[in-house]
Image 1 (spheres, helix red, strand yellow):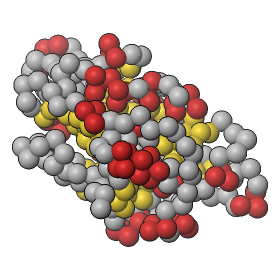
Image 2: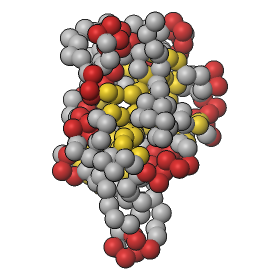
Image 3: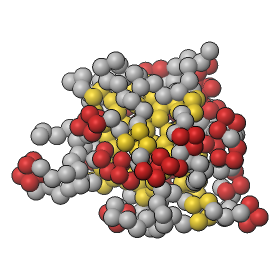
Image 4: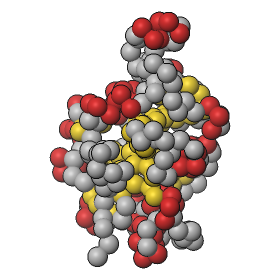
Amino acid sequence: MLKKGFDPNFLGNDYIIPIPRLIDQTKLDALNCGELFQYTHFSLVMNKRRRFLIYGANNIDKNTMKNIRRKDDWHFCNQMGVENQIGNEFYRNNPWDRGHMVRRRDVCWGSLEEAKQANFDSFCWGNIVLQHGEINQGIWNQIENWILEHEDNYLKKLSIFTGPIFTDHDREYCGEDRKLGCGIQIPAGFWKVMFYVNKKKELRCLAFVVKQDDFWFNEYGKLFKTIENYQVPLNMISQISGVEFEEVLYDTNPLFFWANQFTFGKNIHTPELYKIRGKQDLIIEREH
């Protein structure tokens, strides 16, 4: 039987990444009180109000990755209920791609049987979100590869959390046929967090945000330009997503959210955010 779901111990027993907690409105909107829906090498938590996922959690093992030919097996997942997912009718004749939150190739590892099943599972509508084509086909889709290939990644493994950014101002979208009804809102952007073990055998994480809609009006939305990728502190991810990680994990991120002696001495503005145009812009480590 294939092993299902995100593995918190994937990086080793000394580097456990617990499933995060949901807080505030995100907790209220969660389907079945935040139930984890389990698939091959990944798990999903759904938003019952928005009918998109709150986040996907997945593991990647570069050492056993398989090159599985893409086959668009789009399908509803019965275990979470068809009524809680957005189907293909909302992805026609518009600039919005069917954006995988958990990347298809990220879960195609392990045995050939596992990789094929994971490939199929990734096409569940619960894992898909309205995503602008420039995001789906650009730098955002390369960040995992950069970290897997980076010399500092000791195990060549990642544990990843990815999700949409929902705000009260997200624009409404009705789909191609208004008979389908309106009420679907396009996410304001997306966030991604990656955990890995570095060459010093220390747990590290990197966090990223991309904005896809100028309707994001809150204090953080003003900091980001549309369709540009940013590296940010882990604390910022929690504030914009309502997804709260284990407290000790925030210190594994190299960026600062609050001012301190180091930021004052280096004249660093907080919260830190850095535009990512290529892998050379990544901040992997820093002295502090």
